[in-house]
Length: 114
Image (cartoon, rainbow, N blue to C red; front, side, top):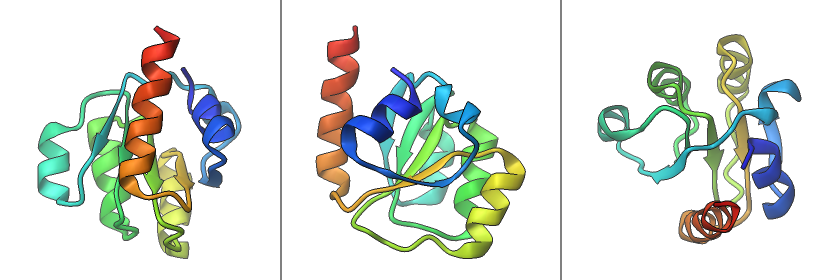
């Protein structure tokens, strides 16, 4: 399952990243808002759900090689964060769904995909 699959199936909006980046495979999903904890627990290729939208999110996603960041609940992503995500090649999506809804739906899609 790719980032594009998740974006299309869940109706997410692409905030940062190129179309090519959306072809990256997702290995799992992780939901956490404590940046230091996410930095220690995010696995390579995970899709990370967080309400944070500051520059540190891009740093953690880049450091851990997260496949993508999704910001839930229609929270607006800061322009400087979008610019830094594009610079560091970190895909970012946004959704009006809650973190819990996103987690459940993504895990269900990943299980169906095999």
